[in-house]
Image 1 (tube, rainbow, N blue to C red):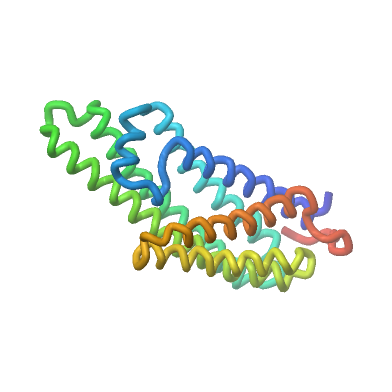
Image 2: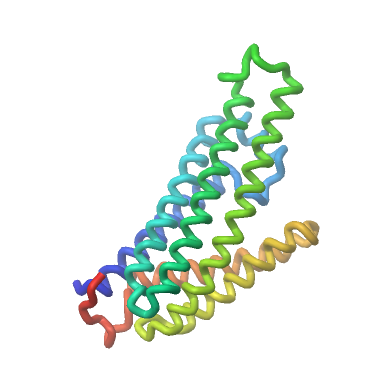
Length: 229
């Protein structure tokens, strides 16, 4: 298998792992769409499953960064500067996401009573738990800025690459617009949840489309030549 095709398949496989762990994190832990009370309820109902969700959240960040690295190796021949840009934007988002999970771990520890017992009264524990959970949600929101921005140079390079379908690049740029719209809607018009649903559908189409193309097709047949990576 030549290096270009190999890099594409690796990127697709890593992207698939990212999606799987993101789904597990959403299923067992929490993303920003959940309210603070929903988070507290999840923690108290089943701490073990919530912990699995937290670990999955971190692993999703790791695989997302590895995906960006594989895409960098694949697309740097198109434009090394833009490839480095989307890699750095992705790295920043992943760093913020993983840091925010630390605060969620802290909230879990407080609610479980394993570390807070005897140090704080119940009201203080509730206050600190809400504080840490809110910190996590804010961190997750900030990470979305970078997760949206990285799609712009990525989409541009996919369009310019010739060895990947242009429609995938267009979908990635539309995904950037959808994430940006969702970000501002969350703060300005939080009651319009329909916007979040539409943006999520767009993101799923773009990400699944890129993932499965890379995994099963790799690159167009006429461009499957050996390149240095």
